[in-house]
Image (cartoon, rainbow, N blue to C red; front, side, top):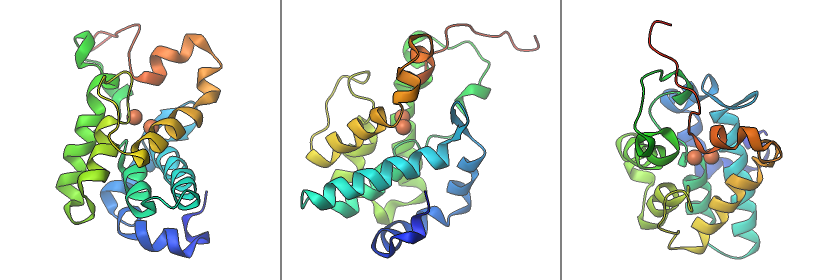
Length: 169
Ligand SMILES: [Fe+2]
Ligand SMILES: [Fe+2]
């Protein structure tokens, strides 16, 4: 997906996609052979188009969609044993919000923050407060249907490791 094809969209998200910290997500693996950067862009563009069609807040949707997985580190690289509820699937939405507040405070509002922190519903049990959040939550899952087609990959999709490697092994 090429964000510069849509001028209106590009203007909304420009400062994020040109930010060196965000660009690092090109090297973070999301699922299969897609990067976190590509995945986030896909979720953001599709969600933005739906929000625009429904005359909702397209700006907050585009920004929330783009930052929904802006967590700190590639989770697959973490070989430390984590308690079940500390695993990626449960904690990364909160991390993405903290990181977004750190890097892009001027782009956030109540809606974008809610989109980011609730996007893992129902794994994170509190549902999105706004329609824009429901859009991002659903689009995030739908674009991962490839993964959902393979039940053995489900734990990996939601960010739960089924086998934990020991450090040094
Ligand atoms: Fe996520
Ligand atoms: Fe995602």
